[in-house]
Image (cartoon, rainbow, N blue to C red; front, side, top):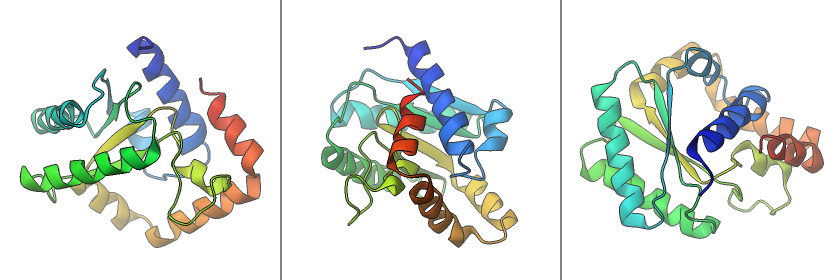
Length: 180
């Protein structure tokens, strides 16, 4: 496994240059600038261990209200996107089973992210293509507050897709890959 500090540095660059720089998430800048994102790199590679790590991060958020959000990064796990989607579904079920439904939400990011029927080479996929498989663990309360302040939150995905497609596949790939 690559050293955790390198993975975190790369992930921060991806957040700054891609997620915030392309305005894919208008809510990411505040916790990023405020240093209230916790980055956790794990060497877990099986579902049971990855889900255990997710629960540990829920507990960390429970105990540390100053942490706005967590990125749980799996550099050595789930290289196959379809297998990763199965893990995301298990994570969502686990949050419900552990009474975290309505408290935390899991958003998935993966190097090979692909929207439903989109072709593999659709630049829009880069709106969710991270450097490593990861879970973004978000406080539901923060989502509600952020959405209340945005004039048209439903238009965010549409704007992201349009931006990525306008920039094109090469631009989006180079931008993301420059974060390594």
